[in-house]
Length: 393
Image (cartoon, rainbow, N blue to C red):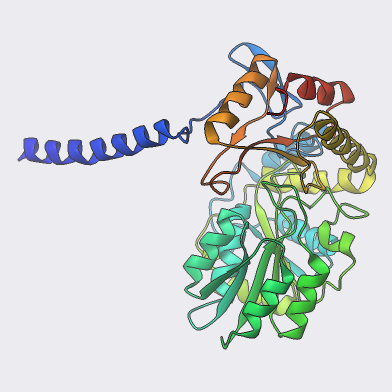
């Protein structure tokens, strides 16, 4: 009997190995890369110091002593874990305070913390939409949005990237009971920005719920780091905002900001909130400290914007095609996955870490190097990355 079970297990794992070999042949196999230290503008990997252009630590706050110190202080006061969901006893005054700060930052009535930005998207979409409803999703939305659409059971209609006209056509033809429009505000693989005034106009015209993911905009865009919605100047009333603490805010966790009734509904109906252990105090304390820095040091955003401009202009001057990026996410499209890996290897040999992004993270034929900039980079780092790139074909 044992040998039969062993053969069955062997056949199952052999099938997995075959699939991995297929990924390898198509230059799509992935492996974990582990730096020796934290997420600064330089990383030490395999004994070498590399310029780090692959982190979402846009403002350099993940290793800021004030943020790390606040994390340590919160852990000392409240422990390493709350060890329960928020609806049991897994809350602290820090959680309540952070929710109030996030609601104020995003111009909403209330906020709700989740254990990750991924879970925040799942939690919002699966609670607010159900079978009989329809969700209209941008073609390049993040995987967490795609999964939230699928798990909701609602009909999902995909509109062309940043095409509000196509969205309007699709939603006008829908007879669904409830209609949701969902989009990232800053798209994580291209660094471009959604046409937010146009999306808001379509939502108002068709009485649809507008859900906007500010993961890569919070702390980076807007007059006070409020995000792309504030920068666009649209009325935030009625918009459901999803975000993360793990990028510009240098912590971990996600959140939803919305009207008080919507947030109360999520507390009662959102499974990724109800059945999940709450954020550890250290993450909450770190995020609160990061929000203080975001408010007090606008020069970080200004520097980040200047560095991104320098990189985009340098790529164009070298003959590379321009991108639609308006943010510190700057892609260099290469098309083929192996071509992207070859450029990654060339950069790394020159002391620059910028990762190849390949399908299924991006559509077939659009593999790229994605440069993620940090306010703690300097002009010399940008110039070094530019100099290490091969000439355009």
